[in-house]
Length: 245
Image (cartoon, rainbow, N blue to C red; front, side, top):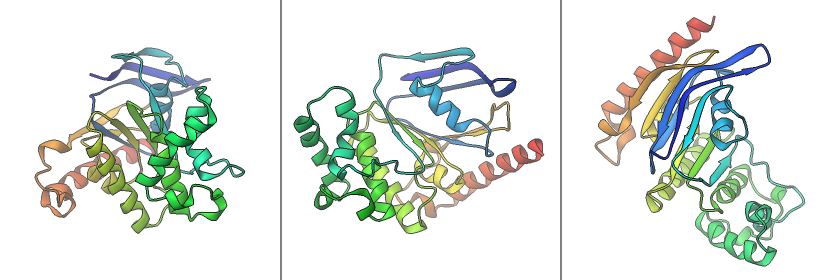
């Protein structure tokens, strides 16, 4: 077990957001969180990263962990070159500029942006900016990658390509764990090992799908089992929306 949320509860003032939420994450596991807007999915990521303290319950870590984060928008510094944007987490940790920039370059090569290392963010397409943000999230060799709807604003082709890049990176680093927040049932079932469907506020787990039991092919998203799991998750989401109404 890499980390565990045990009976997590959290309120924002008088508003209960999470109530009795528990989850575990194993090394190398990809976990997707689905649920209605405002149910607390992003809040879970903030608790996991230590940015929010649980109001009740516990966050248990197997050891001190390094986290990398990626969001729906690339959030690149507009005045900084792409290489310096990717190196930023290392600089914030106190690494010298030259060493941080050198460590960022292989990541840019990995995501296909080595030729744009000295470009400014506005000179990149939206998909290229997200690839730079992906490299930045990985530059400190995290134990856990926290993804908050990172592909939601992209066109379908770019979204699928970045999803495949995520899977390729996970294959290259099998110890890397991922927690993905998404509104796309298809994306969750395609990319995750396990999917949790959360209910409306105060959020709790309505359904857990173990994708690994059904994934039998590299051509997974064309298999009947894939669409059967998508339908299960869609039904759980529909139930959650009715409950919230």
